[in-house]
Image (cartoon, rainbow, N blue to C red):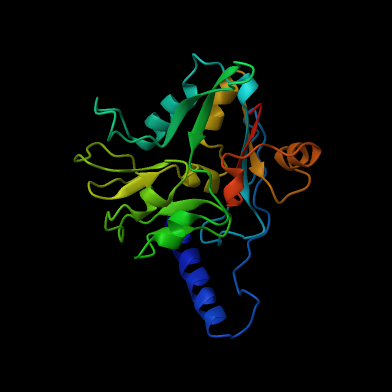
Length: 254
């Protein structure tokens, strides 16, 4: 997370430079050799300690809804275990870093269960409305919350069209080291950034692969990655594509 904050600081400085009219080229640190993941758990090169997150990479997900069984919640369970959140029986306020949403085509009657999480938008409205800069986007496209400076105003919750963020309402115990949480702050899917930085797959993708694999994860900017090839072959559907937020998450079968 410290690398993410460093990168955010760099980007913030660059934005200020742009506003001052100092030039149009961002001086963002680049990191070579950062990773390619494929569905099924292929390992890849981890980012070296101290190495900056690279804007050359854009992490993304492609989810095949037709391969996602309605009775399977492996992705949700894996996220819950990995990040230490749990349902408390209060549906209106319980966290949901990822959730299964039922959708139905009124014309055909076809119904699907769709995993929905933060869509890691390139033009993230949660980042735009955050008054403290706690909501930020890493150079590699992952949208995060810095809970040290989140004041719990919930503007980001209201701005997100995917209902992908929640406020922590209750005290949190037995937290995981990689996903610190705090009462009164906002949280949401991190795309398992610590795992990605260590050269691993997001927990949801890993669990999904064990069940047959409806999720494809990788670098959208790498034309040789499996996800980039799949997206190039056929453009995926985006939830609320009309908003033109350029999400990092795409869907097949919607």
